[in-house]
Length: 445
Image (cartoon, rainbow, N blue to C red):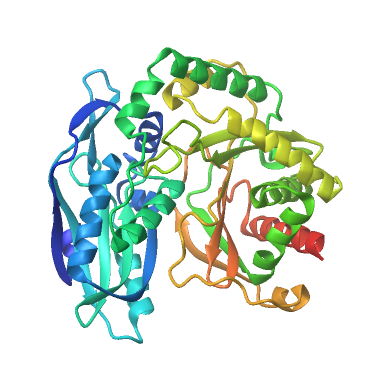
């Protein structure tokens, strides 16, 4: 199914011209995402990045179009297409002119948010063709001809969640007027750094760190079920918890760590209780915006760091959180690398440890439409509103035992998990998620 077949309402384009054009090697982030999604077909839409921006007052359509145009000229990733080079690697091609597709949907004052949700669900299900399409689509909900909600859809090759947050902030500012000049490290310039001597040194250091950790961890994180063939489908479980949303920041503040470290520690402890393996090896998605000009960019930079922590079984939870925070910093330090080179290095190892578990804290990165923080409530009362659902089953994911995402939801925090049910049956997935919630809520109490 094509974008045109799905977009049943008024469709137009925002034309842009005058930006820099050029081509060069793909960045490490672009290459890594391309390798993940290029063979997934329609399932590739799971990797799309999306976020919405409610407008507090009506905005004329021409102002929205002007802000989109300025946004695309500001961030070159939004007008970049990818192509396979003769040597098999990936190139990026930045275009100076084109037209970004926009779909407009009418609503009345009482149905703006539901209409935005429907538009988001409709367009988020459409994969991007990174070679032939622009990596940005825009949905606009209008009341009486004026915009009241704008939803952005990006190919993951163009932006990660941190980049989406920057895009939403820049778009909101552009609606008010021109942005002050600032230095941004565009993807072409980032690729130039990566091929420089300094970039190659950083890449080599990351590979050394990964290989050292892979030589120390457990052979299997699921020893009771090791060697089983992957399940035919991977169930998806979603724990929606207002109590977890109330408790997480409280625990992080009390222990002077990041909320992401608290989630990571709880996942490590929960896995240890479930499997009896007292050490955790997780691939953790981290933000790598450390070079000058990276912080405000709309690009795909985040990559996995390798997190390894021993003594996760039966440990005092506050102590485990503190140790997790330190180990996570180590993982982040070496999470900027050439994925193709790393894969070759890992393949050359005699017996790398099990590194098929993934954790990704997406809170604050892809804002839920209609997002609202949880209403203050006693934690025992909030716990009564926890729900566990099983929305979908995915195709098997090569090299994945489980993938856990922490994400915003209206009035709650959600733990969304996809797992190989040959290793983690549904009952184990439920136990794993409820144990994470219990650990964090108890620590907050």
